[in-house]
Image (cartoon, rainbow, N blue to C red; front, side, top):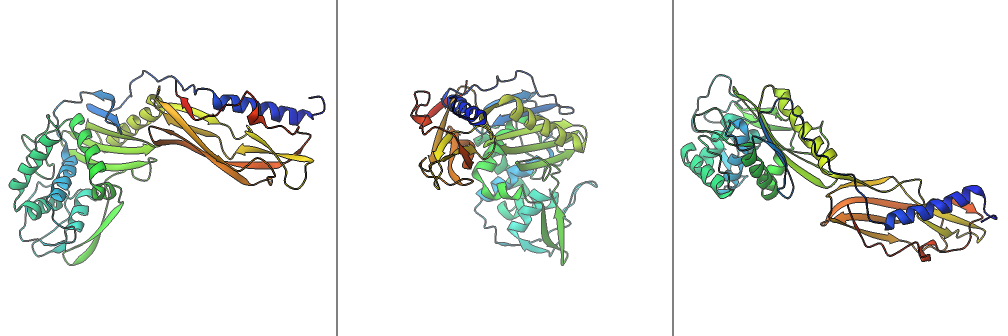
Length: 387
């Protein structure tokens, strides 16, 4: 060791420590026990992608769901088998309460069923929802029967539909839990819905003019990894059925009975942040300054190159479940400096947790010609467990 320069000696020590840490069981942060602190929601629930309830409050309370209704309308319409490319001609005028959000469709307007569906899901047009129901089942009444049957099939025991749009109606209600179940099913089983609820705007012909309608989802473009899915507002409170995906983990949430338009989005963000920051463990797999291998420099045996991660590697994981690691690395001999030489990926239950690219450094002199991975310190790293 006395022949080594101090920087090289420190580098070798770092390699050894990094290898030991990488091969040891992962010690994840302890799961927090605090509850999410929402500001307005009278009822909420948030689940992970497996349907595990992460947090809930009054989740079975039957409340007005407002335009979240339109997610069920979209599923039942798609179940009908009607082609999205079919032409729909509006053959009747319908009336709504004065403050209802409308596309403004009138008798004689012609558009595709796809455009009608997008107008319903993106802009939340209540008239679009009614015409979707009529085009699919002949009448709103017949369509609503199918909505309630679909709810029963999904196990939504605290839900009853009276209309396809969600405007206030006696006997039209759901619960935060039921709506999260519905949202998970909609995004998993209906690709059209999953795409529509992340669409920022839709342009459709109304009254002979092409008109553009923007999404009602204010979280779109402001919350990382947002997957939708539907807003709602009635006199008794605002609502939001939401989903997001970060670190390979997906959440599904619903807030009901919020006081303001912004409150429903703020509380949804609070729930999602809480889930990612508190429920799931943050695991560190390596740092950019920690070399993981020493190799021979291919232009001369007088120098070596060190291999480093290209970035600090971390991810989110479930506590107590195995984390698997796979690495693909170019052979350690005769490598060029400043070159990508491999990659690694960590997975849990088949879900990517983290990945990294490994690259070589500038040449370093005075490093002994040893294979660090042949030392007893290093083992075949095939599986780690988050504690």
